[in-house]
Image (cartoon, rainbow, N blue to C red; front, side):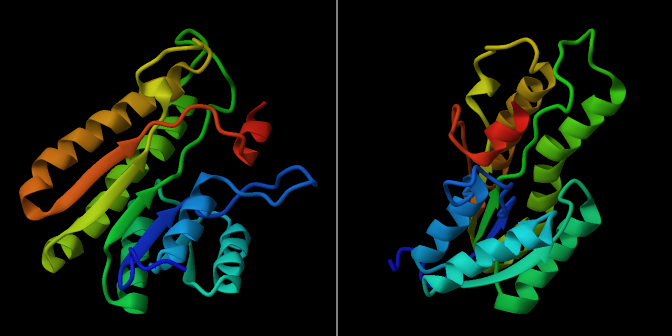
Amino acid sequence: MGDRLKGKVAIVTGAGCLPNAADREPIGNGKAAAILYAAEGARIVAVDIRREAAEETKKRIEAEGGICSVFEADVSKSRDCNAIAAHCLKTYGRIDILHNNVGIMPPKPGGILELDDEIWDLVMNVNLRSIFHTSRAVIPQMLKQGGGCILNISSIAAVRVGNPQTFIYTVSKAAVNQLTRCLAIEFADKRIRVNCIMPGMIDSPTIYHSL
């Protein structure tokens, strides 16, 4: 166990994980982030729309000596995000880190001519609106504490269009980048750091479920 985050509290959305191949433990980006935050001493709120998936993350963290609570939520909904922040404060008394990991590919691939309103709304709500809701829910507490950190998981697709069939995913991730910049500028003088990571293809369960 490390101590770089000793005394800190981290909310990790998408902290559960989809089932994976039978020959390995299922670990996606969110689960891995929660485990590593805990390994560095942070207390974790593992958030997922599937409670049982978040419970598996909690078991892994506690098996390694970490501290974790679980919260089931749909982060595309404002009331759920407010409830996450309230749970974190009730459980740990502070919010230092918000790690926004939730994201989906469109259920049906296609360019602008194949895209319908329902898919547009679904992907934008999950990939972009969720970050708006979670950030708005935690920033008041970070301001009260005198600082905090928000980390948004974007994608290399935000700046590089590789496949027209992922049109809406690419648009949503580009919007995540700009939302991150806007928040970073707005709260820089309040000691709230806002950054994003743009990973490429990662060998995680999500990839196999989207093939």
